[in-house]
Image (tube, rainbow, N blue to C red; front, side, top):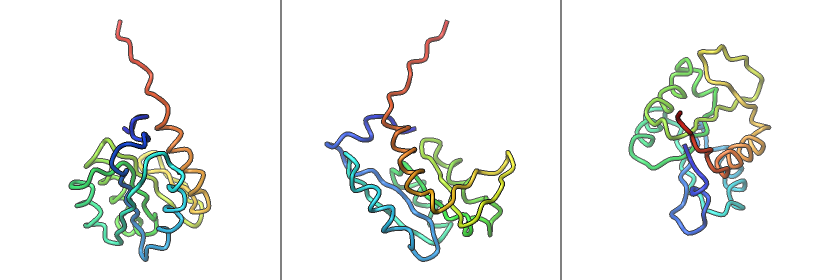
Length: 134
């Protein structure tokens, strides 16, 4: 998981992966990340195999996946991305509401992208609470 340190300004850029058919969400993601204290490098691919390779090889912190692309593989891409790297978050987006079963990843609407990104940043700017074992 990302911690508050991920948003300090003096480090290398955060790497985000956008997985969508034509790169149509790249500019929106770039705009949303411009105000971050730490710069972001936005990577893009339309190929699920390339997405999995990048998750294994790149220091990614977030993957934004077009659910329509993922649907062709039965949500396998979102699950595989999360399974290959437990330290990254995978957010799935679609144009229409889809109800996910408990075994499937939940899906945001593309119109909610700004809100989802703000939620993700807020979640990771908060210091993790200390765990006390008794």
